[in-house]
Structure formats: C-alpha cells, structure tokens
Amino acid sequence: MTDQPSDSDDKLRNDDEQLRDNDGQRFGRLPATEGDREVAGRPSREAVLDFWTDRFGVPADTFADYTFWERGSGKIWAFRGELPSPVEIEALGMTFLRTRQEHWKPTLSAIQRFGDAASDNVIDLTREQAQTFLAGEDQELAWDGDWGYLIVTHELAGEREPLGVGLYVYDELRSQVPKGRRRDLRD
Amino acid sequence: MEVLERYESIVDDFEAFLAACERSLPSVVRVNTIKTSVDRATEALAAEGITAEPIDWHDGLLALPDGNPGSNWPYVQGWLHGQEEVSALPPLVLDPQPGERVWDAAAAPGSKTTQLAALMDDDGMVVATDNNLGRLSALRSNAERLGVTNLAVTNEDARNHSLKPFDGREYDRALVDVPCSCEGTIRKNPDALAEWTFEHVQGIAGVQKGILRRAIEATREGGTVVYSTCTFAPEENEAILDDAVEETDARLVDVDLPLDSRPGITEWEGDTFDPSVRKARRIYPHFNDTGGFFVAKLEVTA
Ligand SMILES: C[S@@+](CC[C@H](N)C(=O)[O-])C[C@H]1O[C@@H](n2cnc3c(N)ncnc32)[C@H](O)[C@@H]1O
Image (cartoon, rainbow over all chains, first blue to last red; front, side, top):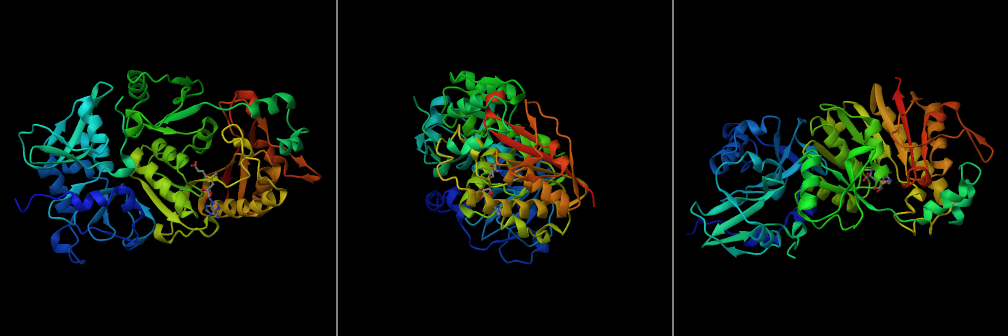
C-alpha cells in the first residue's frame, strides 16, 4: 500500500492557496520529451499527455493547441497558445496538474474543462452524493476500478458533467474539492 | 445624491434620472459559453427552481430576481458569472475575434476579461493587467472557475505595460475599462458617492489618460481600442477622449449599441472638447433601467 496516493498535504494546500503561492514568478515551458529536458525533475509534455491518456483515456489531441508550463516545483499550467520561455508574469492559462507526488493529480479546473473527453476512471455520482462531494466530505461508495484519483461527474441539464477530482481509497471517495470551491447545496 | 445635481444641465428628464438612481438593480448573470450553452444554463437554473428572466438585448444575460446567483449547480460548474447588465457592453463593442491578441488594461476582477475570452472561443490571447494584486487574485479565481485558458495575467501599472513577455508584438484590440469615480454604480452600491470629491475626479483623470494613451500605443495600426467607465463625469469621459484624439494616433468611430443612449457632450463647465467625442455613448439609468455607463470606440491610425 505504500504507493497509494496521499491526500493529506494537497488538502491543506487548496487551489486558492496555490494561486497565492509565489515560489518563483517564472513559468518555464515543459520540454517536449525527457531527452529535451534542461531543468532537473521537470516533467515532459509527452509524460503529461501520457498521463491523461493512460489514467483517464483523454486523447492527446485534446491538448493539441496547448502549451504546458511549470511554475514552482511540480505545478503545471496549461495555456492555449505559445510564448517564448521562460515568462515572468502572474498567471499563464489555467492551473492544470500537480506532479510533485508520485501520483499525479489534475486540478478541479482542468477536470471541469477537459474531463468531458475522459473514458476511464470516471465515477458518476447521484445528486445527493455530488452534494456531499462538493461540500468537501468523504463518503463510502462502491467502485470496481483502480484506487487513486478519479474524475467525478454528475448529471446536469440532461448531460454528464465533470465536477472535480476525488481520491478513491479503502472503499471511500475522498473529496479533493479545494476549500475555496466547496459549497453546501444540500437542502 | 447631491453630487449628481451637477449633471442637471446635460441629462434629459432629470427627475426620472434621480429617481432611477435611487432604485436597486436585480442580480444579473452572464452565461459562460466556454463551458455551456444558454439553453443548458437556463434549463439547469429552472431545474433548481431559480427564476431566470432573459435580458431582451442580449441572449447570454439572465436576470435572477430572487438574487443569490452563487449558490447553485450551474454556478459551481462555471456556467454563470455575476455581472451587471451594462458591464457586458464594452466587450461587445470591442468585438474581439478568435485568434486575435487582446489587452484588457484594467482587468480585475475579470468580468470583462472572461467575457472577452468567451467571445474569442477561448482562442487567441487575452492579456489581463491590473496594478492591484488582491483584485488580481479575484480575477484568477473567476478565470479558473469559468475555464478560461487563453489568458496571461500581469501585475503592473497599465501606463507602463510591457510587451516584453509577449514577444514585443502589438495588440489587435484593447479594452480600457478604467478606475473611475463609479457614479453610475449607485444603484448597486448606494455608498458609491459617499467619498466623491472633485480632487479625486481630477486625480483619477490623470491615470485614465495615461492608461488610454498606453493602450493606443500598444495596439497595431488599424486596431480597435474601447474606452469605458461607469461614471457620468465628463472630466473622466469626454475630456479623456479629447486628450487621446489630440495627443495620439487614434480617432473616434461610431458605436452601435443595443440600448438607448445619448451622444458624448462637447462642452462642460467652460471647456470644449473635440467634436468627434459625440461618437461616444452615454447610458443613463432611467432610459433602460440599468446602471450608468460610458463607452467609446477608437481606431488606431498609426
Ligand atoms: C473599473 S475596475 C475594472 C473592472 C474590470 N474591467 C471588470 O470588468 O471586472 C478598474 C480597475 O483598474 C485597476 N487600476 C487602477 N489603477 C490602475 C493602473 N494604473 N494600472 C492598472 N490597473 C489599474 C483597479 O485596481 C481596478 O481593478
């Protein structure tokens, strides 16, 4: 069980805190492949695309118009466009993926924007379960698939809508909704 | 309200104007077409029993008479953004196209930034600048929730905006939605005039001139710049345009608005402005039952 993802530290560092986090104002573009790597430890574009395909079945061409950038260690952003690297600005595109831990974790923003294209490790919640998840609470749920990060969806206006990221371990779904995005919509 | 007395000579039906300024405005949301359609957003609101009334001049705006636009599923999914009706005008006037480079010079908290991105189908680039870091963090969380990905954010004084991070290339369009005395927001914020002073108006006019000049400079020949405020004060409106027409390579062009509006004025308290400032539009609260607003469109000529 040692390689199971742990949600403890990421839970403390919710997305709002990440937005304020200023360790390094500089965005460096991800190298195309491992072989092109100049900054130690920086993941490659290829590895990022493989992650979305292997874990969630999101086809690589979903991100054809995107460039990926790192600011601070393991915080990956997705920008729809091109800029010369490095770039020193406040923000570039959207927060996208955390790669510091062994198990990579997509952001809620990325799931809501790109989760539509996923086919694997997607868990559909009922309205009541989605409310519990959105409130930031853990819940016991049955799931046949792998443990780890799942894309959580629910039905809205007649279609399946990606809502966020959950961590499935020990028969429970642990909500990963960052504090600033939690809501209690239970009546 | 005394502050508004200074406009008696320029506003038709002044009593109705004052009366409208006393009435509060309903919550309005803009549907975020980056993530959904107007139909699905309307359906999702209805499913939660939330009354949503379409705003007749723009199919992406819905009035929520019962308020609380932030506590429902479509909001959580980033399908909706709370935005005052008139505040949706400047991006429509700017009319950015997918693939273009656009600068939003005074952008926080990003209502218009995210609307610009949606009008561009999130394709091309929007650079959003503000000098206030706290307000930029509100812009950032709005952009994340709404799923905007073609955005670059800079924290600087817009008067000294640097193109260096962006390859030095000029913009196709720029939106200059400047800080102002906010008189026109009185219906949303009854305290808007509490701190009004003439010195503040004069001080902020200098900032407005500087930001507009920089925006014109940073936009390519043939490009478009839109200037907007939520104030009635000519010192912050026509006077700023007059300065730009005199001092920079830009000319005013006609604006076609879906709301009832009045032309810019050419005389105010002994000053006269370039006749072309008549092409700007003044929006008064009593004509369309909205907030007050001012918007002008310029074409960059060199
Ligand atoms: C009217 S508000 C902008 C509203 C915004 N466009 C929106 O639609 O959400 C004006 C903004 O200008 C910013 N500001 C004031 N002086 C500035 C300067 N010199 N450079 C850049 N931004 C400035 C303020 O912090 C404020 O956020």
